[in-house]
Structures are given as C-alpha cells and as structure tokens.
Length: 79
Image 1 (cartoon, rainbow, N blue to C red):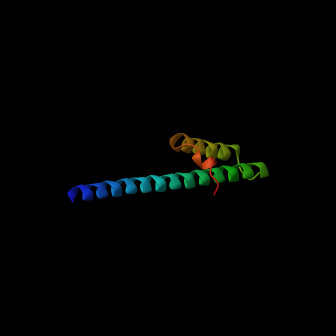
Image 2: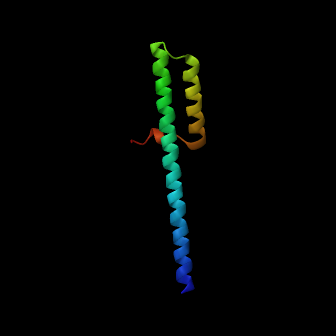
Image 3: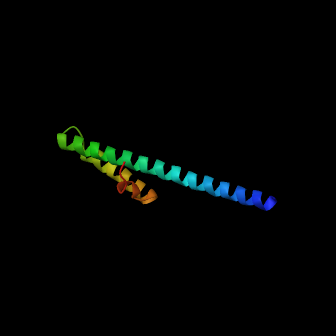
C-alpha cells in the first residue's frame, strides 16, 4: 500500500512541477508581449514626433534583456 501512495505522491509532485513551469512560461510570454507592445508604442511616438530615439532604444534594450533571460518564445506564439 505504501508503494502505491509513494507513486501517487511522486506523480502529484511531477504534476505540480509541470503546472508551475507552464504558469512561468505564460507569465514570461505575457511580459515579453507587454515589452514588445511598449517598444511599438515608443517607436510610433518617435515617428510622430512626440517620442524620442532614447525612449525607443530603452524599450528595445529592455526587450532584448527579456529575450536574453527568457528566450524569444513569445515571438513565435499567437495570442
């Protein structure tokens, strides 16, 4: 009986770990999409004359840092 409970506990642990990993992925994708949107807004403002090249570069640097830390998977998913 204890073997069954040990297997059940291990499966539950694995399920929780997979769920946490998926939640982390979703949060990283949302953060990446938000940074991409901010870059677009900064570029648009710059082109319209109400923004600055520095703001656009800052947004680009922040996005690049996110990609370096978490990958660019958010660029390849729709949503």
